[in-house]
Length: 329
Image (cartoon, rainbow, N blue to C red; front, top):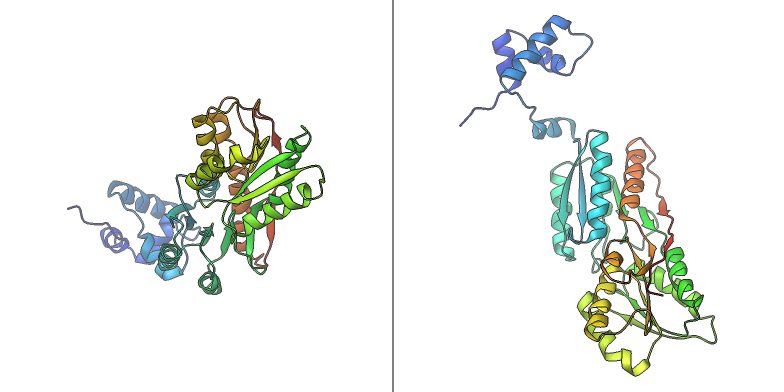
């Protein structure tokens, strides 16, 4: 096995002090150019790599961010991570990506791992079952900034970066109402999540004021549940429109739509809130209010860098949403 090349070994071979070698590798202005050249040439020949773990222990800082999401397989989170990684690379950072699989206990294990790795900061979208955010607050009190995104806690004094949930819901619902739809089935996620509550409140504020419009609310924790609810109710209530608050619920509903051979939009109109990838998989394409994971990643990284620069006050930021017309309404 090849032995690791250390600063001490480089220093001994060049008859220099360890501090001189260290500063030469960092291109420090106090070190003569001739010395820098010798050190850097030998380091390249011996394939020297800095011990980042030791550096982190010494400085209590790293050039790595932790990212905790419910599932990397989600296109929204995949898009968010791609955006985040793109920005992180530009600034010399890397990402440690962890999944909670929507389990609070695994989420806490991931949080602990980020802390032990001395990450520079953490981006986290909490699980649907997370109710206690005190562990996150304790980590932040130890000078590890946390930016909550997408699924965020209902807690004021923390940094949150979200999509414009109310505005996105308004765009989607008005797209149906403007087409004269009168009987809407609305599918929402976990009622305990703040993202669900924001989208639900917006829906009620719009549709609830329409005296000539009927609607039914359904809550489904996953695509399978949304699919079964749809099949149980579609022929009983005879809706003319469906609203889905997420890609996951849209997937469940569309599975049943295809199974029952319901024609879109002749028999039923559908609109969703989406990152944009899932609606394009169907024909006709599903109309949706855009909630871009890529744009959210840019905004979240920008907030993290400002936090690290000293702007540590709590903020809640959001990205704008636009309606993307498909052939489903």
